[in-house]
Structure formats: structure tokens, C-alpha cells
Length: 87
Image (tube, rainbow, N blue to C red; front, side, top):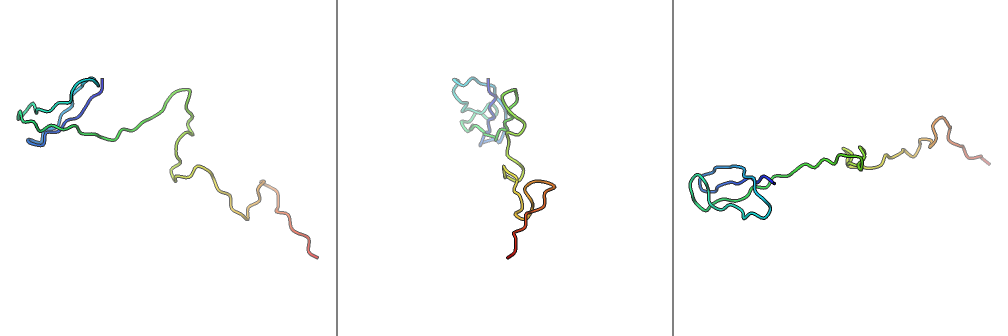
């Protein structure tokens, strides 16, 4: 069952409540008894683990997915760039 965070706009209390998906959201504050409760949503980090996921299945820190080669670098290591014959 999920845990929801509630915040009372009247008295400022914040608490967590474990509820089923089918349960109605709470509306009355347990402290001040006013109908000023609202759910608080926080961003959730997701981590995929298991045999169906690879360690490389994430975005690189720079946001780029491929490495870029410089134009003047030879494509194969140890091989000098070919020179064009002069006429």
C-alpha cells in the first residue's frame, strides 16, 4: 500500500498516512479538525534493477549519448592519416 503525505493549510501540520489506492483522500485534519488537508506530492527517484536492465541504460552526465571524434584525429589508432598526392 502506498504512503501519502498530507499537509493542513489551517494549522500547518504535515503527516504520512498509509492508504489503499481505492481509499478516499483525507479531508479533515486530525489536529485542528478543520477541512483543510491536501496531499503533498514529492518527486520520486526510480532505479531499474534486475537482469533485464543494463548499467549503461541511463543518460550520461553531460546529456550526450555518443562520443564525438575530432575531425583531424585518425579513425584507427596507430595509423597515420593518408596524404593526397601532389601534382
